[in-house]
Length: 478
Image (cartoon, rainbow, N blue to C red):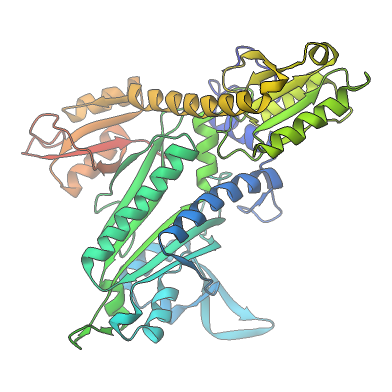
């Protein structure tokens, strides 16, 4: 990271991490507050990051056979009530429409907090035979959940997301889909967002309302708190039976199908900020950055400088790099700080002396390091630097995760770790919900997941000392 702070409008993260986050979100022009409490405006730069996330996921979904659909924004109350566990889980967050124009509705309508019941209602009408399966659907939309307290990106009342919904002839196919889509999310986070994840299964206490199993990717932020990056749910045939979805199998027997759902939202952008940002603002991984390189002409009033900058831009565009030039009338120093604030991975400076030496100067956002690049080798070197920045950001985040994950063999040890260090704690767990609640009360942490990659930390539960063969990751979370 850059050693010297260049942007004074941002609170130091060491002083107040929450205020730092809000300052960055506003100062980097990602989000603005709206006139409706708890609702935010996603500004062009913030939306551009979401578009890049969306493009990667949409491509992968389609490669795996999924199709995009669009469901209604309103859910009749009677439809929502058809799956009890599901409606009970979302009841506190539902927002209701009771009037249409000036007339009171005969039945109130819920603004969708998620769309499981809408998909089920549709499938009950169109799925009749084994030939109709599988149904592999995805929806890009916004949903509304009436959160009591809100924060930019992390907790909105309305937020953008994708929600996948699939229907399968067998439980095996549905479980494979659930795990496959979790791995797609892991790929997004690790390969594009440069954020290492822990893949695992949620405890019954933390699983999605109405699901038999919930899987998640969990990330560690710079302040050592957890962020749930994405979830994938296996519903079994519970929703299908509740909504009378049935198909004739190959033996002409009427059978209930098996369902999954999976989702990832703009909360992921909050994760990028809190994983890679510093006291100078954003630091975006090149693969997800709207602008990968910014070309800044120095002494732009000198003959040929502006033109040379534009020439570099065109060359880099031709090479497939997302690049712009800043030819505004602001000073070079102001431009440097501004684009550093916005997290542009690479700054390219070009001035009269550089032109004379047939070179430019590249400055990395992640380290602040500068190096001269010979213009004949511009494209090759810029691509190399962007790849190296991507790898370095992942390495830093991985180090943060590893260095701040600790083992505990007792609840007292877990409490001491949280008080002294924070971060993630790994313990053995007997599977009891009472022990899970006791850990939360004593150490102020929740179970993040039961990792797929298990290891033994003794043979007894850290909370009750009874025999245990399951390892759980605990942590404070956003």
